[in-house]
Amino acid sequence: MVIEMKYEIERAKAQQACEILKEQDIDAWLIWVRETSQMADPVLELILGGDLTWQSALIFTENEKIAIVGNFDKDGVKSKGIFDTVIPYTASIRDELIKQLSRKDPNRIAINYSVNDVAADGLTVGMHKLLLDYLKNTPFSNRLMSAEHHIQKLRGRKTTEEVSRIRMAVEIAENIFEKAKNFVKVGMTEIEIYDYFHHCMKEYDVTSAWEEEHNPAVDAGPYKQFGHAGPIENKTLAGHLLHFDFGVKYRGYCSDIQRMFFFGNKRDVPAEVQDAFETVRDGIQAAADFVRPGAVGYEVDAVARDFVKAAGYEEYQHALGHQLGRLAHDGGTLLGPKWERYGDSPMGVVEVGNVFTLEFYVTTEHYGQVSLEEDILITREGCEFLSQPQRELICIS
Image (cartoon, rainbow, N blue to C red):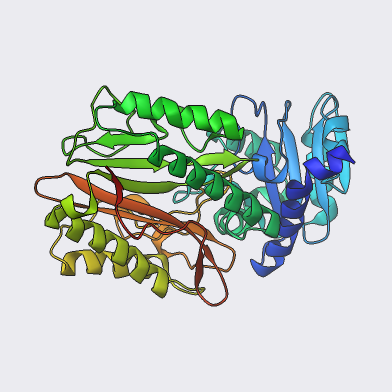
């Protein structure tokens, strides 16, 4: 019973994987891995929830889920109740792999490589070469294709339980922000504030949604450049801004939220800071009002980007939003511009069940950057805010 509860999501996602195959006109999805504690395919956490040791083939078809694994992995994989058939081997996987493929005889076999999406690019060059060697002199070597779109749909279409865990991750992050309102004071260093957030994370028994060294990002004053860097001995000052980028991982699922504090009373907020804050706040709302199932990623980004430029600011230098899930950056459709560095990801279509961030910054002349980030769930009607959008600067008197 404990095992059944533990792998509830993995079983649901494995079944979802089979259902998506027919939609994508794919006959089989082959996950081909080895020693996954050292080199894990990003999709394994989603549909297996554990490691594999020897060369392993996880084969999904419309009506069957097959695992060919080393004999010492057999019992552990079988106990999860994910696969209909678990086949162990000892000396070589080659014969059993060919046997199972011949039994199913798929014309289109999706494997995990992608030039656009790191979350769909789990097959190593070495394992690809080995697979081609094993399939030599069989018809299957010429039937391989990218599983990119299949994986993107599988990761993006969140189940009810996945959404529930993301909601809780968002709620915990927001609770920690609430605690921070009563903790942060003028004269504190970024490191002191960072340490407090980690103290709170331990209280809530959650882990970091991304690299712990820069989660939360704590940026005090006008001279600290926002980005993927940790806190420093920089101190908070009266009349200055304080920026956070923070997310937690709750039972394997992430939140990702940015908030802006100001040290002073509401009447002390400079006009240029207030204008910048309202531009970011309202630009995010404009994108939220526009986003819906069927929208294309770059179209959603353009709403916020055009809003920013119309307000007289330089456009932000990143995508408006990425998907949230097992990872803070969960792959799939990106709400971003058609820049070469993003490949085809901004051309993806928004779907019901996707969870995105909406985030961007503008730069003021004297007070540095102003940035917010909210988390949303795509619904049939549009979107639902999972986070409570920041409507006003959080003023610390």
